[in-house]
Length: 103
Image (cartoon, rainbow, N blue to C red):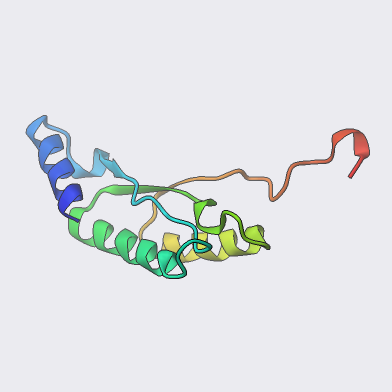
């Protein structure tokens, strides 16, 4: 939050309103830290409520290295959007298509 406040203040000093600012809270994989998802969701909610900026996020970072990534990503994305996520970086395909009909 403190870094976000500094970013918003610096932007305002240049005449950039909060609604034109985008902050990325940097999601960490839950494979490395099982609390990472909750921490990221809390950060999204706090940033949106307190700073009024747009929030971006690598939508698949949360599931890196885990099985069933597609399911994890969909669930996390829905919760993040409910918390205030406005811009997400994702691959719209759940997995790459097979080459030449081969699996």
